[in-house]
Image (cartoon, rainbow over all chains, first blue to last red; front, side):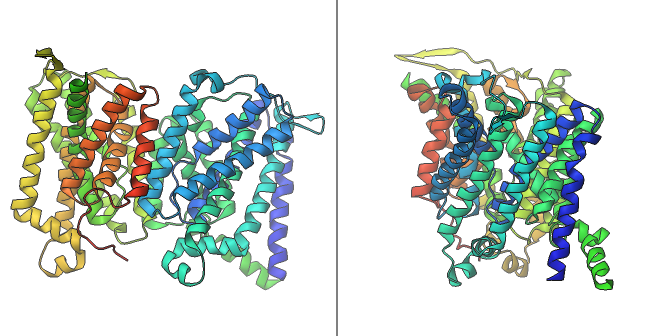
Length: 325
Length: 290
């Protein structure tokens, strides 16, 4: 019990420190990058739920970012619904689409599932690009209103930081609770061994459907938040390249580790912004990193037996301190 | 027009077939989703392109490109795939994505992201044959691709290397006990895959009359993967027939249903197909490895 309390305290300290970032940040640009980190973290968390916890290699997650973004943009621009309705309904619509996709993938094994998700992503891009009357084609939709909650308008980067930050905290806590619950343990069981899981009374096919709908809900929410943040949506937020880029975030941070996803997205979003040279060699760096990690540390930085534990011994350090106390 | 679509579909399908043969053999042996396949052979295609621009002999250029594809793919196999050959399914896939990224960035840094004009010296003309009109370029491509396919099927059916490839695809430990040099054979399979990929890539560039970075991933890896799954994982016949089916589907959908939604329809058909027949048209006679 003591350990558990300690852990929550560490999280709280981190949260409190992070809350003061907008006061430390020098200009709008830095704040903007940090906001992007927060929003990408939600996507990374949802990818981690599918790839890291349930072990389904989904390469078409940005399709849901696109669907969520377009849904809430269209709801607000064409149907003039209030923000909160568009925002939440984007999540539920994505969960529904994820449910349909998951139903298609019910019996599919590894390769077929990956291919179906890629195909789904390509179909979505084509629809965004070509359904001119609704999505405005390659031009995208402009002048999407900023988030408004209870009459409070989040229109500057400073205010939007808190919007994204609290959204991330809520999503994090909910996903954390899900992974600790019975169904979350079922996700990990079907990742580790589907055959053994089915003998333990887990319905593998239905669990896949559930993980797809739950993760799609969060991806949709994140997509909607991204679109309302940048006030603009175009089909290029949902390309396959973007998909793989976002897939790298939880892989880098550590599959199956929720703080790892946030760390991974922070590294992958901030690093290219720091130096121009790095930006040019970004893909090569990430590529070498992925190969090297798969060879020596398949669980990423903060995953189980990952770099964090092996090299720096973060967890051991904390545990030793606790024991001394 | 029907005849034209048929010829177009067959020629693009035969290019996909060349690319997917190399992909499918590896896929059948190791069950590895080789995301790097397309980007590795794209490097070879760009080498060929550079040599052609430098006014070298075309055959020399093509052979250099093939050599680059062979060597690069064996190096990648040695350092990125072999150490994790027997770990969980996800690890080699992610490693392959990493290799794809390295190759793509190398291409962008060396040759730039532009689209270049690509010309092998084969000029296509329109030929009228009774009521039918078709381009000769597509016919040439079809003939070249078909001859390479015959060559590779001869290699697999008749030579010792081919027999050891089949043995390895059935069981790696058993074939190692029978004295098959497993590592060398797998490395050669990768090399052959890369070489065929370069030939396919050059034909693809000839077909589109241009070379750009997208020939690797979107036009290479993904199509090869689709045709492997369509035809049946791990079988040569499956790869060829799957690729031809894919080419014909693309051509007819583009011609008769919709050009802008072409990929969406092709993927839609494809998804329905693998839901109905998940093992593909001609599955290899291998039991699933638990």
